[in-house]
Image (cartoon, rainbow over all chains, first blue to last red):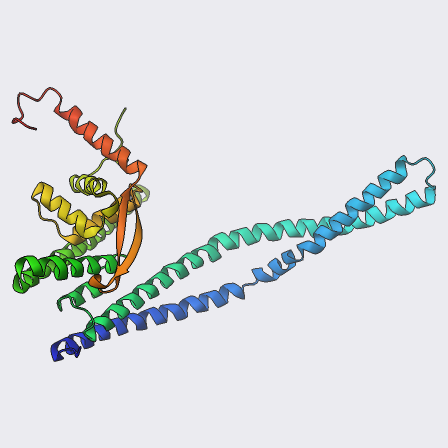
Length: 240
Length: 113
């Protein structure tokens, strides 16, 4: 099906809007990647590498345990020669002296690593996840817009507004529901003109619902900000 | 048993929950909207239904899953909804609150309420 000129022009406008969003998302991606690089090259990783040598520490710990065990055996064995006991004692002491600072260093590294993970890695991971969700959303919108602009959908032209303004999580099911109702029931029951009017009403009221929700959320943020400002002024007055 | 604020449901939330319950396995956006419209005579935008369902999902009263894509929907899948245990309890509490508030007011209220 060849799309009409009007549809072509409208889709151009929406492609432009999507392009702007993609540009913004790409710049955000670059920032996030830079942050990833910063996190990966943070000095803490050297410590973590040291911590990564935990296996060595554990081996040494095991060896020291082995050594102590042997020493115990020798101690309780009446026939054991004194020289052997003394040498085992020396070896065990040596191992314990070696292991003690390693274990201490290890614990400190782990502690620092936990803080680093909670303060840097976790928030960054969350931000990356939100960003990848946003990229998925944009991709969905672009896919639907392509269907619309090439005339591959039988729904009225107004559908394009849904692609742009309905949250991506509802996009598939909502546009599918409307198209099904429009093509299967409304046209058959009321005729094409009335069905078109029904579709228009649904799109406009749906967009209004989402707009109203956004306004409500923004006003909640504004209300919180106002309350915080009031508290701040109160605190300032207390200390002035 | 006291009814906490978390358990309370708005009027439209109750209608949506009841419609999902009534429709059973066939509960998806447009059918829920139709059910509300047919039973209450109140017209509802499909967007309002989806926003309410979203809120109910966030409260864990309802869960959803994607069905299969069909050609009459332009290759788009339906999202089906079902009421969870917490949703049932919330519904029960809301009805209970209403009943308690009506107690002793029968002589003031019009008949049938």
